[in-house]
Image (tube, rainbow, N blue to C red; front, side, top):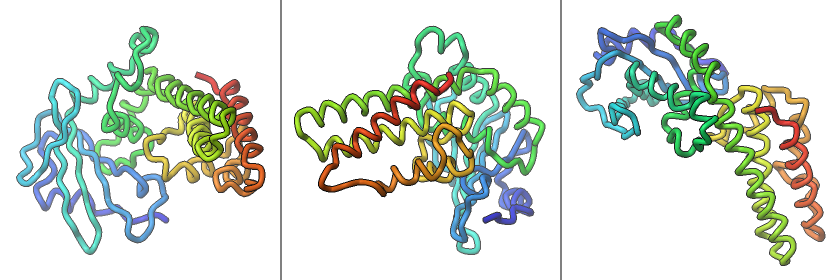
Length: 260
């Protein structure tokens, strides 16, 4: 479902929410990706050169030189609007955190960035510019030159591998229920790794995994295959270990094929 975003920047300006030195305003989340429903929120990222002074905004800590971002939320016509304010210098620093130098030095993605930063970087790719399209286009190109894809893909592979080992160990001691849960987690991380390896980010918002798989049209794991496993369509309550082994085998196969 596509929602009409025309007039959104004018409304934000009317409310005094767009600083004079704003470089870009872009819509993010389900609306930007065409996955919205009638009650979806309007979420915007706004990037400026100086710290905005928005009365009533709340602050969110980030591990950057300027240690916070600001967010402002309001309701309009029954829909929630939220604007997150970032500094251009913060974007520079986030891109530096995911450089190839950092990746080659063995820095973990968990140490390189927190979820708030990761969400911003992934949304550079999928954001819908309402103002400052050239800024967003330039930053996308810069992100593509970093090791961001390698960081998140490697993390998903590691998390998948850990859950695969857990599932097998649990099967060995007869802890069937826990093995099933671990296999389900391994499947999610493995699929995320395949998606991220192709530049389709979003592992920190797993509710959209099925949409991402369907949209990506992956050869390694077609949507029908993924959905059958995700919904446990062929799970046999009399032989749950067989389902766990099928999932584990697929996860191992996928890990071999994913490119970093």
